Length: 231
Length: 263
Image (cartoon, rainbow over all chains, first blue to last red; front, side, top):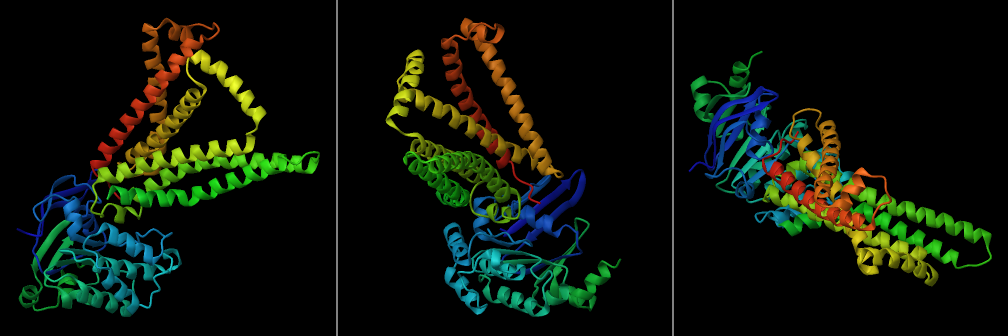
């Protein structure tokens, strides 16, 4: 059984098709790049998988079941927004995650926070947006999930922070789990990808193993992407 | 999980309410203490000012309670925080139920605080005697005890406020089902739902009036109101509000369970 499967998935907003007939299978134990230009439909697809949007038609199956309590137990999702309650401090956020997610490893989270020199008594409202994003990444990667979905984790951050983010992802995801990374900054992540999915205009244009694609096209994923989506 | 959700909802709503509760108690206490000092115009004026502030704090508590319940629901279910709320391993039914339980608890405590503050402000043997005499007349016409009458008034106001809170939840859900001008549509839905409910209430009372001459007299004559008719309408009102609360809870829950479209 596939970890995640989308069958004929469509999403419309005000009669405008944002996602068109998406058919997709995500196996276990892979790092997958969901690649596409801005506005291609990557975030919409991710939000549908995470039950933040309701599909117009089609079906999403996670471990064979529709999105619900069970899928939320096994998916660890990093949105492109900062979603934490600004009135809380880091310690309270850790307690919150511990209370709601049975697979949250607070020791791992505390260790990662220590590496960042973040005091757990710091209030979220006193943290910069960049710091809040790092905290969210730590929270998401501290869950022993089966599927990590990271929406634009590298968006709007400096190269040094990009390295930190990629290292945190690579060294902390659960063994045997899959990671879906949505981004348009391909050069930074292509070295870690097992599979790539190209999304454009709400449609999946290409799904392939990263190595096979590189060999076939004799170019890097970044170059292939530029060729595909040349304006 | 429901208990945990309720705990966090209550924490958030009470964070501001506790300030209003404290100020209500402090100014009630100050007003009461100063009113005990006799033959001083300064203390008498200050006491009156304190009572006024206390009463405005009590009114603010109830307004703030409703507003914070709505803001919590809106932020939690449809704004940035929704990215966390809807990805928790909890059903949408429980998320909505948690908001309703939070509304019941916070509105109840706000009324209790208001009653206590009023007690601090105005309790005296003579005031209680006046109140007792007044309520005894009313209670005997309603054929219930004074305590029963106080409870009846408390229940009617409590249900009315809870009903307003639930209309707010339902309209936030309806407004957010569309893809544009969500807030505006939520406000319009709220006003429309409230008006529809009020018209429906009048219709229900009219239908009951067809079978009860006293109630019908309330509607189509200008004669002095019969106390029996008011009593019937009051009990009917409690029944109607309870039905509305159940309807809005079920409708809100069903719509919320159908799924959300978070921006």
